[in-house]
Image (cartoon, rainbow, N blue to C red; front, side):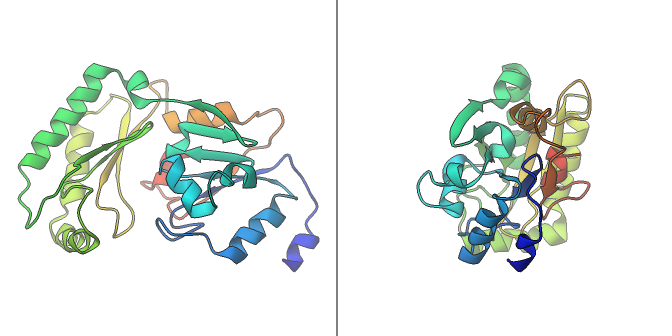
Length: 239
């Protein structure tokens, strides 16, 4: 905290932070000391959070009730497709509106066929979790228990189930404006499908974030996250 006193305020700088694995362990509460630090940091620069989870999960991790949208200048849920600024909802975007129903169904049907051929010791429910900006695709099923998820993780390490799944998706949907990545933690058993803009290398969620942040008033955002690498989710949003 002492270093903060020597830091000159510049509210034209926006610092964006990933949630799971950066500000908190996955799906856990933020440490109170870290929470206090961010409130001190907010007096110096603008701060925002970007999470793949829906707003209710982010709010639960970073505060109580709706206080999270008042603690941070910007809150981007579901990888930026749900946007809050200064305590108010800006907009919600939906992947199906950008992707189109035909391609979306092709993607879902391909995944279901592919997963139907995978033999595992256990399978549960919710094999495809539909979110505003992406799809989480789970060969074991997202409703599996923590123990079952760990069991799948060990099998996945040996047999590279998700890695092969990603390769198959990349081959099947090459040139369709989609990118695929694996959940980065042992407790994230899914493959993730993220929509990219057809016009270039910009992620749909990234475009939503850029549109929400006035570039004339804010310098290039500084990104901070635990998956800032070539195939990581943070790099998928901010190439």
